[in-house]
Image (cartoon, rainbow, N blue to C red; front, side, top):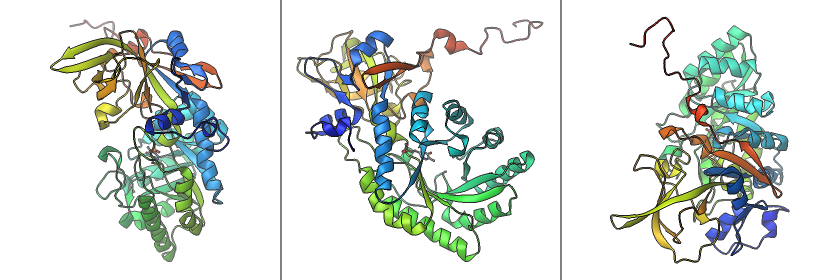
Length: 449
Ligand SMILES: *Cc1c(COP(=O)(O)O)cnc(C)c1O
């Protein structure tokens, strides 16, 4: 990854060392884990637990690595960071200062991106269910483009553009009908799922867009799914999209197309996976991308931020039940949903190396659901109550998927960089939990009955 902290470290000897390298973590035998030169024990002492920590040095470096990979193939890449992966405005602001735009999927993400200082022109709006209000807001702020996902949505966008006299660039998110090998919940490109406009409706969509006065068709795009480890589906899908474009041209359509959007989806290492590198990814797609003659845009999310985050949590109790050992920690499924939702693996490291013999334990949270688990049968040393662990790979789809279930306050988020730490979001207060609620919501003239 270029002239980086990571590259200067030794080659990883195994998947567990590779995970440390990916996160910019350093584990020296009798010291607490450090991240970007900051002791994670100091983060715990200052901000408590549970707390997410993001290494912004690593995120910036991964961003540059991604862009450079395409540049080295002669492709200037526009990045629209997928905000849903990690939408903390400190992360969005940092990425914007590196040159990234934003790929948003809601009015809330639009507000976050604008608040973080992402230039409106660098924002694209994706998603299958944009509301009229959200479309108004997006066009009112002059965002770069709206990516359309159904024929009916074209009519809605045209209506909103007409009412507000907006001129808006739009893209067609094509569902290319290719299979990807990932968790079914994050596969978004097969025939018969809700995402994108199917290939056989692309011409009709282009025609409808070109007939609408305020709309200009600038982009054809795909987003195949998430946590992908193979370039073949991208090649397959992009070939299909370029064929569709050729068919549009034959019919005199799509003459205003300027951009080809390859989506996100590049996979990361959570455990023993072997992710493809951006240079392999870019190199494999380059001939096809160049042949298109279009400007290339990508929407990475997970790849930029997932490895750069850890969730710090405290061991509350140990317990033996039904022949099993449990480690009860103060982070739960409301803070980190991926294990419950996808049966996802997240590596767990004690903040300070523990001499005891590792034994399999189930690491579970305090939430009143049996599905509230962080790790099953994980080999860990006998960590006493009051000790702390770091849950790796939690820089994406972690805090952003979190909830307040069980009236749990959402954790603090801390950024670390070059030996310094800063609070990027304070831990929620109890008042935050019932803001906007009232024990007696009836107007004062009415009785409580
Ligand atoms: C979620 C999403 C992405 C990002 O996916 P990652 O796997 O996090 O890279 C990109 N584009 C769209 C339209 C998305 O919905």
